[in-house]
Image 1 (cartoon, rainbow, N blue to C red):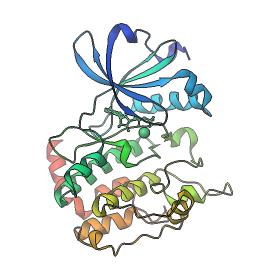
Image 2: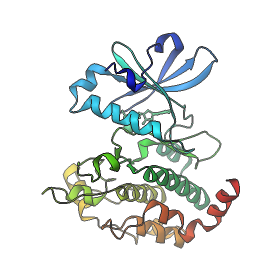
Image 3: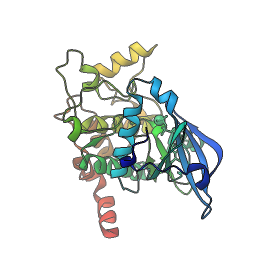
Length: 290
Ligand code: ADP
Ligand code: MG
């Protein structure tokens, strides 16, 4: 890659000691590492250059992920500190998010109480609102990309993986089909004829699916195979009469229903969600902190 103006550092192995593998996605491996100079721990998202070169627009998307992450600074978004390049790899040095994946935690602890869900929803939406203020859409919100900061509580989440994120300033309108079946907004699946475009509200939809999943323990779109899941996802028929769903606070149900509207024009934006009555008390608490 070697573009000096991208400020890629070149002393990775002198500066860091890598200890163990802590995560794996479809493009990168994530390692625990220590900065030798001050013994601080970081997570390193490591990309193999040759693997990325084999992917369609692989290097381009890696540089895009770096560019977008550099703009972001929010307590619920993984922080990128520096980027290194070696002969074979590119390394993103990010804050270590020590609490593991959200879904794993839920498997261990069981259903989350209503107050925890409320705080979690607020944190997730405020992360989205931060992105959306920079005109960035994450486009791949799903449980694996939500991590927990620590074991202290089950609501301080951190949004990771900007591998599919896009800037609406660069692209203005988004039309690439991407995301994960079952979590993706229906308008992204509608794009067949090149006519249907979408915007950052696709993230609000995916966040709604995640909240639905946390309440009921199941995804709203199911099917015997990928194709059937995609069809259910595209048709966007959601069972809001599910008994577990109905057991959630009524204001929470109301908010989620606005997040899961099929038509993105009708769907709430992330900032509208944060102003929903469901968050009235929490919003005050957060304002006091500011
Ligand atoms: P990919 O783009 O390949 O999907 P991710 O950024 O999603 O890579 O990282 C893969 C996995 O590594 C995540 O699902 C998560 O479990 C773990 N992970 C990512 N970032 C961190 C981090 N900052 N701290 C701890 N674990 C992380
Ligand atoms: Mg991932």
